[in-house]
Image (cartoon, rainbow, N blue to C red; front, side, top):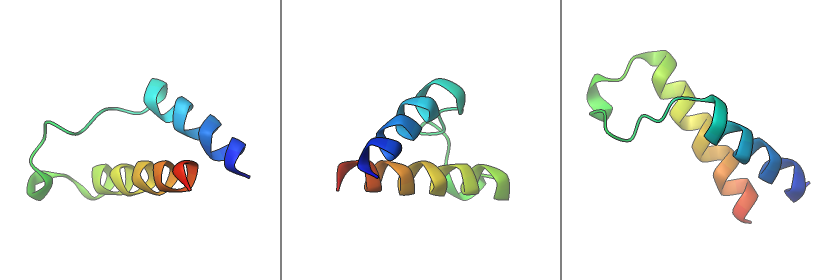
Length: 47
């Protein structure tokens, strides 16, 4: 299962936009969802 999350993490880095320079308060709901998904995948790939 960990290998699946590592694969998803590498795909996220290549396909999804990087939002770390944006102010978190000004993110749209969609951008917040992307940030949450990226965090969830990263957290599970490191466990």
